[in-house]
Image (cartoon, rainbow, N blue to C red; front, top):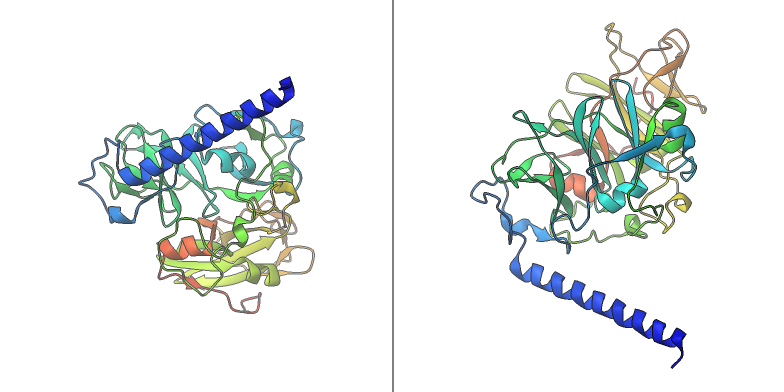
Length: 379
């Protein structure tokens, strides 16, 4: 037998052994149940533990990043203009976390502008959320539990081993059960938008060295979310993207097909006036194998329309960008006026995030779906 054939046979035997070991682990973990091996106080819970399922990996089997490294945005050449990133800016410390890295690690424990944060992304729900890691004076380190609820990542902290729901920020099991992490303002935008707005910003470097590939090929076209045991809300296709928010204690969502069509929506929820901006130029991280070759799904953000001065604006899209009726000032996707009488003004961003519809609806079953063809002026 030639040396090449022997090496090929050895590689096949090794691959087979790894596959069998993975299958053995998965089978045993499923039989043992998702609570096996934890020191968590399971007497404290706000959920039915029978709803929790194993995602098929052990605790931190998807490794979070605990000591993140960054490079200046001007020296980043491996990302394209449409590469999707999660942007965080605290006290002028602007950082971008590419989804090509977050799909492989799901959690980054970091400190931004002296605030300890957890930058999180659940690929199965397309949910990117950033949280303050401080609870009762303790700074927590978060990891990937390997368990899922409604297909969404359940995180854990290494102080009490409480379980935390990634999409909502609530501790659902353990000593911290019922507590909610504080959201930190973030945006899911394109690398081009981040680079233009934050020329002195920093970009996360993944520790594995090779990224840019999507391990969930065509997942955002699937009609069957992975390991989802709930009832699907049939008002939209399960993996349709929505911008979801809780405004005036009312959950609501705007579908990306609507936003792509009208570009912006002026709305009023309770006594709060809001506007949603949508802009093309961001690739899906869950479409093609090569993320940067994936289809353009755009980006969406929500802001309050009432300025600190007390003036309430209404907006329209003139084909080139966002303009307010009242002063004719021009605004970018980040809610900043860059031209006109209000140049330099910043709209107050509302906490709203992009999710797959099935996940948002599962955690917010009473959500309003604003998916009608309303006039974009809202006047």
